Length: 157
Length: 291
Image (cartoon, rainbow over all chains, first blue to last red; front, side):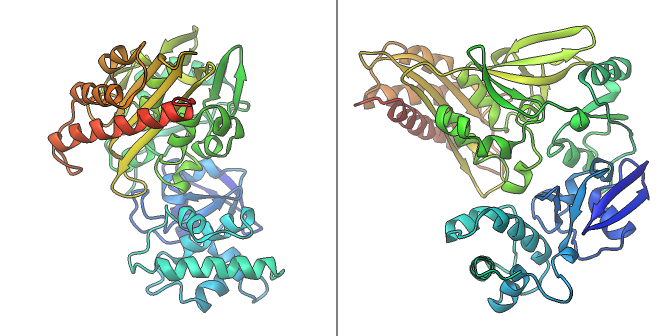
């Protein structure tokens, strides 16, 4: 079946089998490998992408369901060589060790910060509660998201 | 993990969807949020030959009060429920549930109606809808019918929906004066199913006695359980500590938990007692009891 999407601002299309999962369309057909497959059982959130602006687990959605819709992956965060504040925050606050959960954490945080300009620590923890980090780096991840919130409030990106 | 192959159908009206379901019969499954169905398909615990995706049908995402009832449409996401001012102000029991279903990412796709239609006794909305005395609306090619939620769950992962039917709406009676509810869930971590959970809804009379009550239990039996003996015990009584304690004991007796990774049956039964007492106390407090 033909699937047409807008991904990171670019029109892409592909002919796919109905059972192809969205994460496989993104990684194997579009070759955007920043999105990771973690648990493959809808638990870990490593595969999080934005579907019409909302973070969803791309391992738990068929590619055909995204037909005609807008997607954003971690590759869409950086603009003209400048990191998005949420990426800068993870760098500055050491919000990652192994980095496996990071693309999902970034996409969830990015969507969250669109709607929460000055989140408390509890609100950030709630927002990322569907994304697992097995390095147990949550303290610094929370700091990173709040760093990004502050940067965005100052008008960065 | 790759699901088995299937034919994909994306109807754009309820009429087209029900015509497809009538034609495909038991070989078809309805895809709404997909947050339960797709994991089952990836594990090959489900391998439907046809998927009827209802996400392209316009006008099925709504939360509104109409004719003395709250109506929740088939494509209302859990996140929509969580963000609804109407739910937050008028249906505290559903507001509680909306914050503990799976995790925030899953809630962006998962639907409230799907949470019932899946028929999983571990899901959170069934107990809440039992406590609220809700009904579901099932659509088929031959027409629509309403099914009380208390008759909806017929066994593990089995519901009163017939092949060819799709759940298109949940109807909840609008709350009477001095009524409120609460949902109390113990989960090992965010995203896990309940070790046990209890939904309570109470209506207080002018004298402060309990006029109406609903009590639903999550994941402590082969189906969601309505604790009818505890409800009968509470009706007409003042909600003092001793009364709520006895009702909670009765609710625990009505649970039918099994031993699994979340704990031994005895532990879960006692958990029902504790959670029922807490849910009832919170519901009574929210309904303005003791004031």
